[in-house]
Length: 196
Image (cartoon, rainbow, N blue to C red; front, side, top):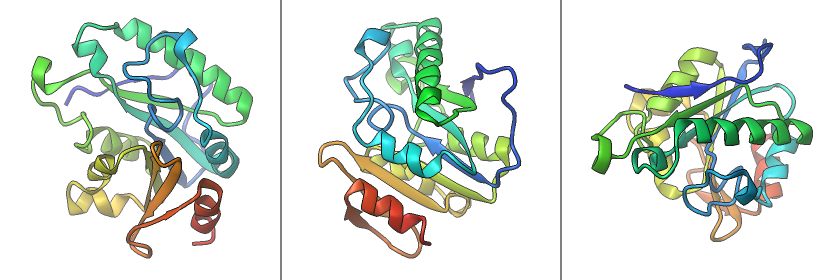
């Protein structure tokens, strides 16, 4: 498994938090324009402030993102690192600290199949192993992303909730053992989640 990661802040380490938030990048943090790699093309999603508001206290936060543009030769790992560092600085000013960025640079058509590429659960499992949380939430932007949290029973049992940001409908959908599948507006959904 070839999972790569960035960690920009030297003083960032695992906190005493028992909660872990894993964020997909494109469609959750930023508007998905396809193969984002230039700072000038970055636009944060309208929903992201709701995420910041609910998860800024008591949660370790990391990003897990497929970046097949690297395998396709559209941009380099250095380009991705520069953009990720810029995003982290901007997000920190918004009130949310991201401690690590996991990314998969592969695509099966160019590099073969790798278990780090979502919907395979490799990146999620590595994050969970690193942080060792008691509670984990994963936020993605596509129905297919839930497979990364439910590929096998062992992985699924480690993910307490999966929030799917569906940018097409501008809504979140909520998936967990208590509510199998429902759709709410962003603020209502997050308020409901924090009541559980």
